[in-house]
Amino acid sequence: MHGKLLSPPPSLKRFDYDPSWILYQDQELLVVNKPSGLLSVPGRGPNNAHCLLELLQAEFQNALIVHRLDMDTSGLMVLARDANAHRHLSRQFENRQTRKQYLALCSGRICQDQGEVCLPMRCDWPQRPRQIVDCLHGKFAHTQWQTLQQFSEHFSVLLTPITGRSHQLRVHMQMLGHPILGDNLYADSYALKGASRLMLHAYRLGFIHPSSGRWLDFEQEPDFLYLA
Image (tube, rainbow, N blue to C red; front, top):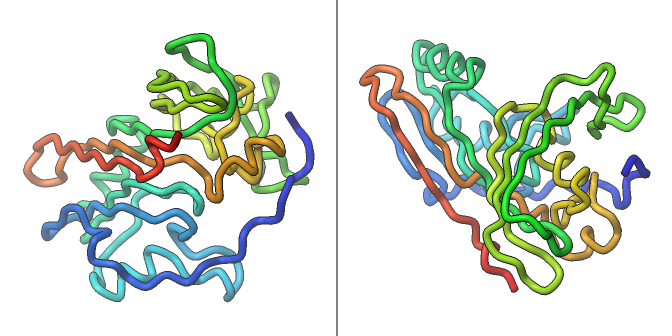
């Protein structure tokens, strides 16, 4: 579907720092659970400065962003606390050495238990920040998916992005005919009204610790997973 935006982006909500966001911390990194509705980093313009990084830097002055989640996506992020950790972690993301998995609620009834989507993507420049599938000019994008539970009119799904394109999971599920509930960019009117927020959560994050070399693996379930 390449239709117009079905609803305007929600106005930015003001958040206060919540210590419960911090799931792990040491001298080199932070692992946090970002709430839905909060930008990862400042957006364009002075009205969009409020973000996770701003709130964390008020508590941890040396916090550095490594990767991002969409504003409406909740879940796990790792931040560095010094330049060496930042280089090490950034390189892992660039070289796809991290492990990332997401949980989502998607519209409809699905007939398969698992599958994959390999559809190239690019920015839809006239309708930024929307992304579109473009088999001629798009960049390779690969997602694996596994159905967890079918409800009456929607299902829960585990999503594993092999590549990391902007809005990849949202676009790929839309192209399967099962948009993520509450997605104000890609859902049809039924799926958009099916939830008050985007039902997409970064559930699992694994990476190598910058100094110890240990593999760290974090999981954090969303509160919407068992929504009937």
